[in-house]
Every structure is written in C-alpha cells, then in structure tokens.
Image (cartoon, rainbow, N blue to C red; front, side, top):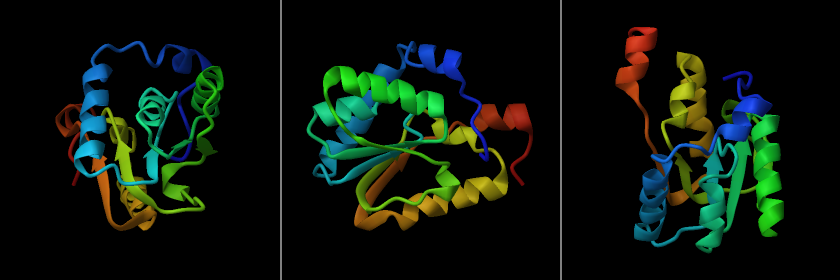
Length: 154
C-alpha cells in the first residue's frame, strides 16, 4: 500500500457504517480478555472510530494511518474530546515508531486494502517488529470477497 486512496470526502463519511459498532465491541472485548495490555497500537486507524473508544476505556493508544485526510479527521475528533493520542502518518510497511506495543489491532477488514503480496508480507512483519514479547495482535480479513474481485492469491 504505497499510497492512500482515502481522500477528504471519503474520510468525512468513513464512520457512517452501523455494522462497525459490533466490531468495536469485539476489539474492546479482546483487549479486556487479554488483561488490557499496553500500550495499544491501531495501525490503519482511519478517523479514530476504534481508537477514541479505546482511549475512553482507559487505553494508552497510538494510531497510524497513511492518509493525511484520515489523520486530520482523527485529530479533529480527538481535539473535540480533549484527548491527545500520538498519531503517525506512515504506511504500515514503512512503520517506524518510538515504542513497542502490548496489544495491536487492525479492525474491520482494513488489512484487505493491502492486496499486493510483497506489501502484505511487509505489512505483517513491521507491526510484529513493534510487538512486545507476549503481546497480542488481532486482525480480521475478508479473503473470499477479495479473491472474487482480484483472483487467486497464489
């Protein structure tokens, strides 16, 4: 994923998906079941739909996204709530952050946006390099729909 295709208009309507609320509960539950390990990282954090509720639940969380529009939208939402997570504008395959994490999550099939095989491999390795020993990494993917659209993964 060498560049972002999330522009300003898309980022403005990004949170308008009711199905995402069930996913939010799922990720918060995984974090709680893991014992609330910290710090937390959400690579590909978008507008903060997941990140902000983690902060409100007491997590020390950072966010990373390749889209300047998504980071700006997230920062505006955080400013409104008077919260200050560290937000980084980087691609996941070039991720270079100052700390390691006890819990990471890539929610809502977001990892499916990385469809080039080499970029996907790097995008799995970079976050792993930032995971603390014994840390948790949770993500979901939607392979069947992507396979139908793009063909075989071989």
